[in-house]
Image 1 (cartoon, rainbow, N blue to C red):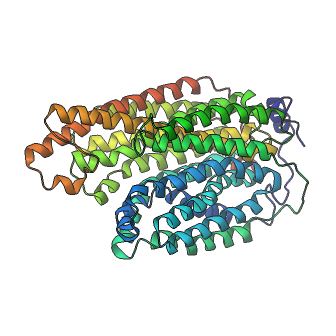
Image 2 (image 1 turned 90 degrees about the vertical axis):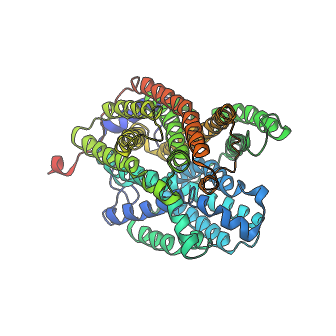
Image 3 (image 1 turned 60 degrees about the vertical axis):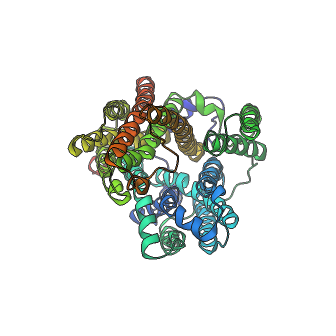
Length: 519
């Protein structure tokens, strides 16, 4: 086993110098069907990421059926919390016991949670089932990215990672649309039941295509580190999700969560420094590639979630688009993600370089966010679409490139933990940004609405606007637009920070060659 505790960069250089690893049944056996593996894990990734957003449009119907309006936010928070906490654990367990086994575990938990969500007869039951579903969903996301590192050389990995980035981004827009369709055509239960047939088909395809290693090694599980990390992440997600919305920032619960974060995080670092097989090896932070891509992923996640979360508000309230149309109007951003991610994959495969791409990503994101600070209700759609396309290009350059760079740099023994850490930083960055942006947007909207003599409440929606006169609708549209401008200015600042850190990246040659070079 590679010694990662002394010098991870030296271990990674030694691994690259040694050439490609032997073709074992887990790293890419001759019996494995790589296209089927990729398709299967892409479907599983789509299901897991869709369930972060698909319930949003169904929540009013769910509340009308089950009641429990005061616990509404927990239907979303429970899933995000559980998936964020479980992702690093699955990453490390996949390194220790094999990703094939952990995929079966995570899929089983996810599908069980989906079935229970569909059967829910009360709001409490649904919230608990969503938490169980999230415990499986967090594993699916990190294992999907790690499995590609097992079966495809780094130089050819960027294109597949780009497809996965497009799947993740597409789900953020498609989730609310699909949720609305299922509610209108069927019942809200089917937004959960639909996972069962697709999940079973995907896992059967994966089981037949991805061959096991056939070896077992005794390991020592870092239970203390897992518990401390779960406490720290759980408290942080709850703090950012509930603070300023469900509960005041000065409430005892929010203050207690803040104290728990401040205690659990240093405790986790102390535990990891002494653990024999840590959940997140601290030696990874000594690697330039790891810490630089972690920072870039964190700020990019913040900017991405900020853009996606508040753009539908602008489209529906300020521009008067229907919920379905507002989802369709976000397609240019997804097109940008798809084009950029696939282009980056092809460039990495051909040149073996990724540093220029990681610099281009935050640059695109910076320009796109600056343009979003100039949006108005009257702006032509082509200009709005071009702006979204630039934002999408930024995300499409960042997410697949950061994952490929990390997996290329770290020893294989910690690839799952490193991949999970990148996903964790992205999720936490998004959670913190949504909380910050939400508080800023609400405060600005209240001030601007008051200046115009308008009472803008939290229940404001497209239906509410229908009962107002033209002057009131125009005033609200202008207030919403102006309240969003500082949100995107902060997102632009985050993109600038990402650009500065991307310039610090020290590039390592990508291992492996494309088919043309091998031929």
